[in-house]
Length: 230
Image (cartoon, rainbow, N blue to C red; front, side, top):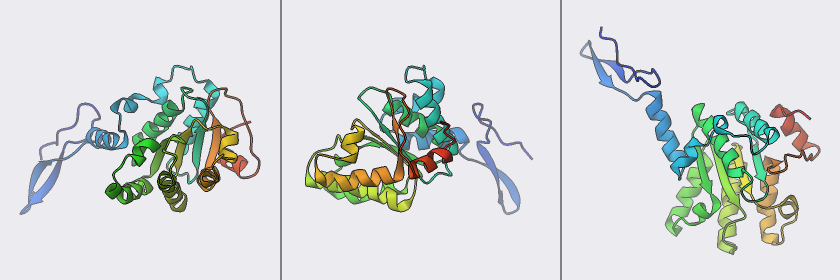
């Protein structure tokens, strides 16, 4: 029998044997590269995000926070809790989120990375299907929580997305420029239920200073699950 051809990049077969009336026939199939690239294309709205990996880290965001994100990614897909990356703009939150997303993709997970403004830019007739798509992702990365339009309609969509992830008990990585105080005590009372949901399902990690901030009880349990050491 003829040996099936293999992808020169990943080494996986690009042909498979099927039988037609008892006779073996080689037919084309997708290798791991093709499957991964297809999932990567679905994952990111900006292709350059696919290049943001832990291997590409240049050290400017601090070894402590990067190592914690790496350990979180190593525990996937077995985690049910998420990660909340908070800190000032340009502190590395989106980079670290993409690092986690790419690590999860390499493990074969179905991952989606979307910003809150992107979610809210969907047409009215797309909202329900968008929320359903986000809820089904094995890992969801939500960038820029708090940057959405400050309208009742916008806040309701944001809550629906967060609540769907909470109910599904699937891991979600959320990034935000909001401070710890703004998350715990939002100026707008209508945001409180959304932020409370986020704080219930995600362990906060401050990105910028690298200082360790602890919240007792449930957060310490999450940290042990990720193998984070004091």
